[in-house]
Image 1 (tube, rainbow, N blue to C red):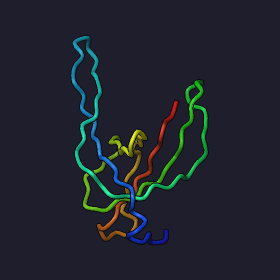
Image 2 (image 1 turned 45 degrees about the vertical axis):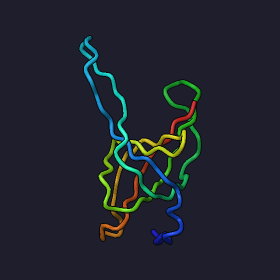
Image 3 (image 1 turned 90 degrees about the horizontal axis):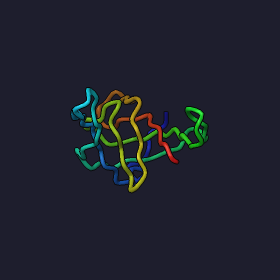
Image 4 (image 1 turned 60 degrees about the vertical axis):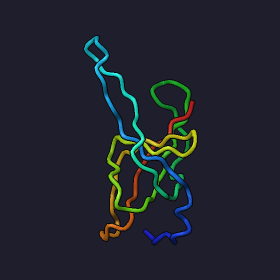
Length: 108
């Protein structure tokens, strides 16, 4: 993986973490709580597909953000109205300067 220049991290993303509260019926209601604002680069890495027999696009993205950040799988990154669910997080350089998040974006 080639190193991105600092200028590539031009998107202001909001890091959101899931918050589950009991719904009184034995289940939970999941909401997302904004944790932090991060600078990052968003790159599309896959084409739309069909999921769960319903029309809808699932796009895979690679989002590179500045570290340190507390992003974990299951968290979400928001860019305006777009929402990216984090599936994996890695530090490919091993230097703790940038994190690469493999994400998916679902659109109706």
